[in-house]
Image (cartoon, rainbow, N blue to C red; front, side):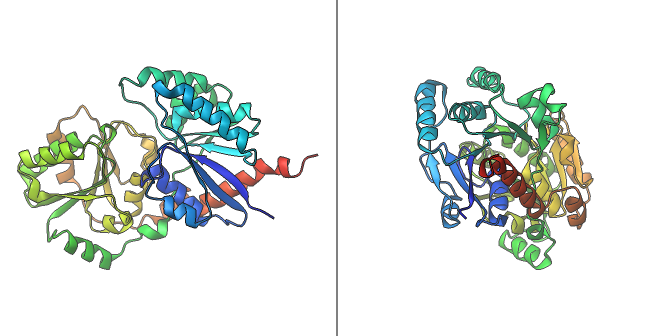
Length: 374
């Protein structure tokens, strides 16, 4: 019997939190029974594309979703679903824009249409009115409502869905074994970073407005003025990276900030860190904050992030209205010991092996009425 093929809809399969979470599930599926295919919205290849294809997945490319090309995009969606009647389950991860995908899927008669919320807010920019429009279009286009947290579900679907059994909070689970404390890896990473005895503060995230890197550098500058024996490790890439590099140089911090780019060994790099700093402007329930806790790190994060993200009691939340000095003192007053958090995270439902098993069962239950019609 052929595997059930599930169509996952994303922006691009780069090494972001959502994308890494999907790959964690995909790798642990019985691909003789469940196979993932992907719609992406970029022409260029993503970091995970080669692996997806090696696992048997198919990648379809759509144009970017922009207000100026809505008509073209809607036409392409209709053509796609008209040509691919084999898909009976569509799982869309593009937040408010899922409404467009699932509307086309509904018109094509696809019975199981999952909208999955991964954010709890949006920045005010020129696209904001169009995003409000996209949320308004959501209506009953989904048949299932998923979210990474209650806040994320409320933000995208409204309180009416949040208060019912229709909302499924699906944890942003990770491979806990990868993040278990490894003292030899810690020594290797610190040697590679030439960290010595310095306090190593880590951050993982795209260089975009959401991750608030400019404020992060302000915090680090305040830390450095109080304790110059410190190193900031920045993992990721993005359009704001050149501006952040210039700011680091202007503040005289170049010798104390390491730009590591996009990495595939996040679990290993976290072994070498002493504390994780995460002042995002908004998030859903960030995978990387789960990963940092799984690595046993103390974390200091913005209070814009849902308190649901503190799974181990090792996350301290601080308001973004507080000064960089306030944040710096919190970092310097923290303890830096690593802890084994695997049991807590497993019992909280954040082991990707368990979640992958649940998700496979869900997909099969969605298919069963189609496979065995009465």
